[in-house]
Length: 487
Ligand code: 5AD
Ligand code: SF4
Image (cartoon, rainbow, N blue to C red):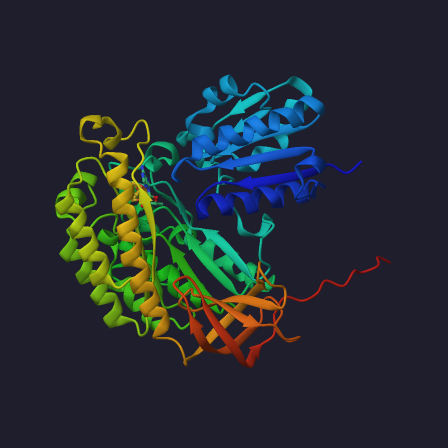
């Protein structure tokens, strides 16, 4: 009997990348994927403690699954990801029917842990930061089963060395750790050979990629070059001890033959260097899109958050990015209702959002994450009704600029990478422009996922564009696998 698995993903891109890797591990183990809980032998809930309400959603889902498990005791339920890591014992206390709890550092052990649980009963295994160096914790790009054939995540770094007062990441994901440069480029080459056209470089703080590599190298011996870690590209550069830079990685991945598009998320504004902007401008494959989380427009709130920049400085960086890169789309993350946020602070956020003219923004209502500095400031919590009102007002401002940015594109020709049939209408194909805008195009035979096409934008809304096909630029590169009969 074939065993079937279902994975539910509750979080950020990092979390989605982990889910794709989990799927790859199960596939390699002979499992089949299913979308129906009723058919599954294993259900993995991959959690995230960054997104709002993650714990309520998790416990809600576990509640529903209890009935299923009562009827089918063989069903295995696993909770993975950073919420699992943080709340490990609590999960088993509150949901005794969970078989396996594992964290973000031991995704690669999932099939083994499930097998152990079948033999010996429930297992909790969370690796701590010290155990992270086993080389296996990094999602190697190849072992994953991707949601889209032509697009892949590439995790270049995990952890975070900052200490934003609202954020749980440094506590659960540990200090920054960059994957060796050479390994990343090799992964990009292999992904391209597998038909991948678009790579998104992922990290909690992507643009400080390499900082830990250079620090470690300097501590060991300033004269020793570690080619595997640093990459041999700049052996003659007198400044080589400060490399690899994130900019080097953008250029190297962008140079891989077959990779049409390179994206990355998320950079930190304080670490956005001119070298990164130059690499974006000078590497044709790197897309004209910058997601630059601002979090607030008030200098007082930014200081209380420990973000390391003031609003003016952020806007200067944005202006420098727009000056360096033609037709750059810009998006952001903003939190409203941070402890102590006054009306005047919030007005400053509205002003900044209007001035930045974002293409889109992920907006969040502050929610306390136990263990973070801001969560302690209970006396300064903002009334939820006030936060809600601010949230709606901010959304109006963001949607206004999004719509303006989108309307300005009507009548223009854009390069679109087709992704999949539209969720609402099978006769429409959806894709993305280089600026990461979702475009719906009336389907023709030639528009298969992975097709690169020129599309005229005909209509715009705040969250998407409509377009008409002008011409197909390139067919999908992914070859259909032809079974080979041995012998
Ligand atoms: N409350 C609200 N939003 C948060 N984010 C992170 N932590 C919190 C929190 N405690 C948001 C930030 C971050 C995004 C991924 O999630 O805006 O950039
Ligand atoms: Fe969290 Fe700040 Fe690190 Fe981003 S930079 S992961 S918000 S601590």
